[in-house]
Length: 279
Image (cartoon, rainbow, N blue to C red; front, side):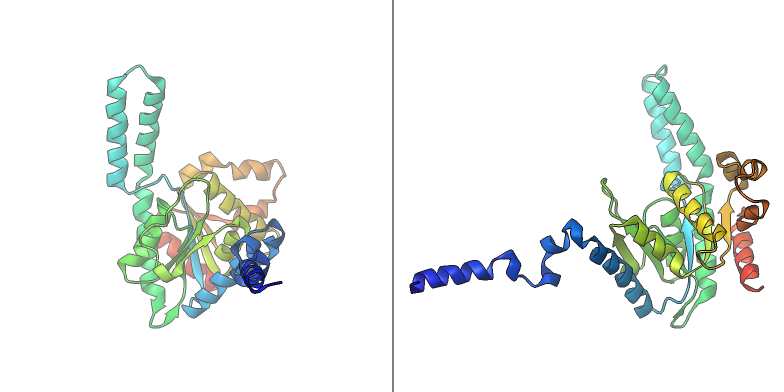
């Protein structure tokens, strides 16, 4: 092998994927066979960062992305009505107006979520200790409201964002150093519950229901710590899920109805959490 061939061979070796350091090789780490390693990293990274920020415990806030602040909900209703005025007989546009009206009615929960997070954060985050830090899914709607409430009082809050097929951006009120992006729903759910001292659930859709039932199942089976689960809006939840029917049919126990409680105000929910941990 002459000098030119040796130089070419060495160049090929140095640029070969096999020569890359394993932990710097994104293609290697993205291989389906490396899934266990990626899941371990998604477990460890938030765990280490929460520890660095002295996050001792959390309060998790779940709720719908479509429940926005009243002013924005009003604008959306106005746009829906304007579209309907263009084609008054269009059933789809009539349906859009109806849905926008219902979402405007629920926009009060945005303010309640913000008030709740403000109350908890102002009470619990003192000096360098971070107790009952507000944690959300990091998106818009109710999640934004809760992060915003903590931001209002200069407190830290976290957002556990998830990589989705559609574009999703974290809301701007999350503490920058406590905003995470997950690939695996399972790891995200684990971090929601690991440090939780309470979960509050506002009206929402499939994602909110998934998170609620995941928590209730773990509580029912004793696979997580005892925490209060508080659902805002009794009227909404009793229409959405007939828990009493499940108990009457024998598919859950009567005592399972005690796994959750209803609240209507921020103060009421915070009092429930305090009383639960004072036992």
